[in-house]
Length: 496
Image (cartoon, helix red, strand yellow):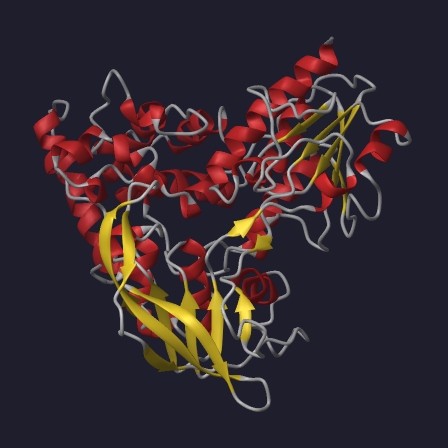
């Protein structure tokens, strides 16, 4: 990724936009394809290594308009098919291209409650942008219309202007719904159900609401004030919020219905149970799950040592095991916490890596060292039980496995040692097991995910579920799609 200064990028966009506006006739498809992709202004890598501020700085109005003008306004709108909540993408881009940013955000909000969040963290390149005709015409998904960046711009602009409209709440029905968890699926359910006039109470296990958006995604990717503003919007609608409330411990799910009188329950407790590799040395001091490491830094602000008492391991050389967005988040956090060297160890190549292209590029710019086609075999420690090194083995790629990616095959005799004092395991998460274990009759898969039907209903009457507790670890927008479906089912059930 190039790193022109924000001022240079904005000046170029201003000139290009002026040239387009001076035309007397609409742009042809060929002219739209010729408009350059608008680079996202960002903090300089050397500077951002030392702070937790947001890396991507956001488009200027001129950049947002130019990027929107690249949309061909296809009649069949293939991008919409790639959006889990079905946003009218050509509609909002058309409004943005014309400079009507308020209409653009209003189009988005018909389907999405969290545009400022999704515009930042959703993997558009494998969702809406993967289907974009512009990307296909230019034979590069990375040159598709940057839908998420424009979405972020119009959402941020509305917030800065204080122009957000409170949703209309229907008359009170006397019915009440419990929402367990406060991540993206739960926020969506709470808003959609509250709009219908039902009382909604959210029960959150942590001391702060927001779910994975708060404990999992670092400040430099998603500022927490944005999540808090979404929570504030819910409470302004009349949604009640109880934190430090662990359903399954503080109160069982069936007690909410049988003793507390809730007419329906939505379970959105996510996938917060970390997976480990089952290798020797995982119990040594200096080995962490990415969940714990990121939760300490993000939710409990351990990075801010002057104002937070949360302890976090101070590392010199860190190995992060994994290749997804969580692995990138952990590696980039370790850089910001002062590690001299951070290695990312992944058993396939960059082509197979599931992390977003942008996150991989940012990690490289910030100095993370990538070790492809390698994996940990055991973690070694000293006589004090602290990590000293990682024994790794090299791989080559064989035939594709069930995921469609080429299977890594160990190269015999390729073992080598890597000197580290910290190992962060970021190989995925399982669903939260507490509610299934404490709720008779709630059916789950062998992986612990709650089983739901096409409406989001579980095996229990009036109990619905969605998000990562159903899907396994997924994306914010997929969780929102699940929440929207479940909310529609809850509202239909309560109308009966």
